[in-house]
Length: 213
Image (cartoon, rainbow, N blue to C red; front, side, top):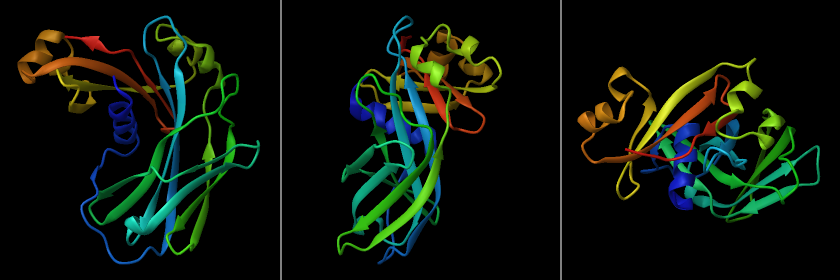
């Protein structure tokens, strides 16, 4: 799966919202921060790619945002990006980024982080968010990750794609989506899918390898 589609899916996993349509004239603050660590398994035997998705609810015109900054208060990791995603759900506006990563050989730090949004006029808003996950999953694969987290309960989801890798469906694995035949009966353009395991507090997700239908 290409990186653009993967990043979009990460944001859908964290938010399940529609794309931003319109907003008001000014940004007055940020609240409700969320952080999710994504374990992305390319195949059954390899260790996952790991990245951090962070977003907050905002007030006002998200388009005024110039820069999204994230800092670990425990370790010396600081990220800055202008490539954030903007979404809207009803009257609520959100902004975030799906691809915070650390250098090879390091783990994403657990603990408190500081989020900073900087507007074009350099006005800045800050809020803290907690990052928590199972570090042992760095050494896991798609076949054994559940046994490494046997003290946790996962919600099982499914993401279904057409031949162009456009997302057709993301949600619960219902009875009519439990086999390839049932998926094709419901979604005739379906070409592949990924199972997604979400912990109940949404602190981390495990994306299983792509399966062809």
